[in-house]
Image (cartoon, rainbow, N blue to C red):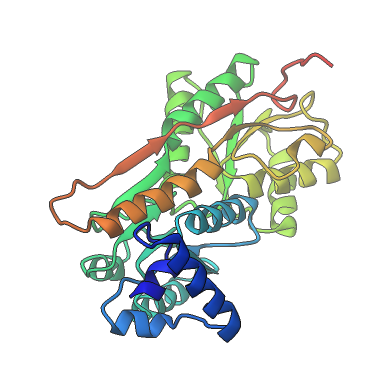
Length: 319
């Protein structure tokens, strides 16, 4: 028990005793057994994080913040990517449950999938991040996607743009649906026609989509992209087709691409508080781990996004 208290940083250990234990640990190269801790009835200090894509700057930044925050709270974070594959995601969740993780932070591939209801009814605390789980009541953290989208599309309209096309992919996700809804609301309020085009999954697909739109009779004069990957693909496609931004076509997007200020025309975006996502997710999950009472209210936290104005929307910025 004394060794366990020293390793976990428990305050009720005399400094002289802690020094002796640490000296013995170094001499013996002792490593605590997680399995033995669990079998002995001691709580696990490992939490899991499952994200859709670790190559995406948005999810990679969240993962880094989760790991750092967990470490500061004396927890270990295991991070895996589901590759937006629901079968793989379910397998990863079951693996974490089988290893008795203390809690799991999940960015679900499908918010309404039936398996989510069964696994969240067990004793292991879950927290949904970015995408709310709609088939179960669990703590959640997300951005006010609809309001943020309304705000930035309205800004684009103030520049006189009327034929604004919404671009993206993964439109089935709850967060994306709310961003699309925000776009459609503002277009309707402004008496402008909505048009959504999806399938921006890679450079070839993006180039084909943009080429078709450029040759359309009602050629767009602006684009609204619903995530950072789409923004990057769009800008590459427009440059390939020698379209000038914003003089030929303006654009605004949701999420801030990595190294956005180094792009040939830095995009105006709604920036989500990514680091805050990671920090708050760990803090809320550990709070639930330490107090798993069913009477404890479910937390549904909505964080605001920040509009970052650059040159792609048509704003003239001071040099």
